[in-house]
Amino acid sequence: MILTLLATKAARYVLAGALVLLAAWWAYDTVYDRGYAAATAVYDRERAAAAEADANEQRRQAIANNAAKKREADALADLAAKEDEITKLRKELRREAQQDPDAGRTALGSGSVQRINKVR
Image 1 (cartoon, rainbow, N blue to C red):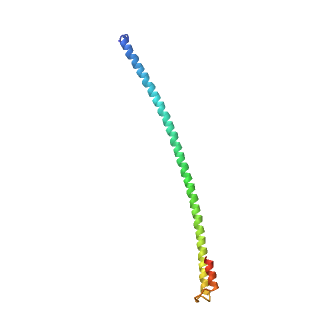
Image 2 (image 1 turned 30 degrees about the vertical axis):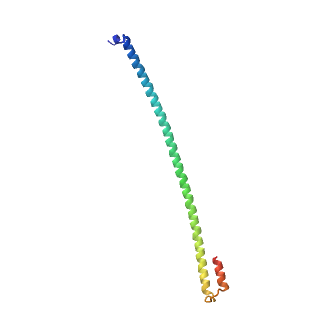
Image 3 (image 1 turned 90 degrees about the horizontal axis):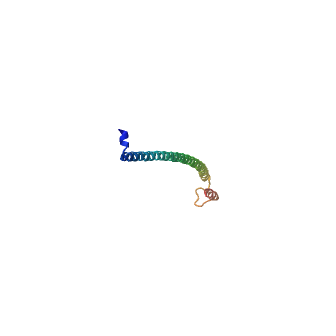
């Protein structure tokens, strides 16, 4: 029965056309699959590179933040030392002013002038 169908010229053309369509579909599908696989590989590489860049940026920011915190701590320690120094100077000047025999005079004595100059 099949052989009698293939005996006609029209049947052979239909069969040849079907084979050509099948081969074209197979070629398209193979190329599509290979292209998809290649695109997936590129996407995976780009995603890995982006993740690495993100990790590097986070490390850089952590290093910069730690350095800034250290500078801030050093600056605060300097300010605290200066504050202690100023507090000691104020106490010393207050004590000297209380011990000054000319404390009640309207004009400034030499001791008062020297204490004022220490504050500058």
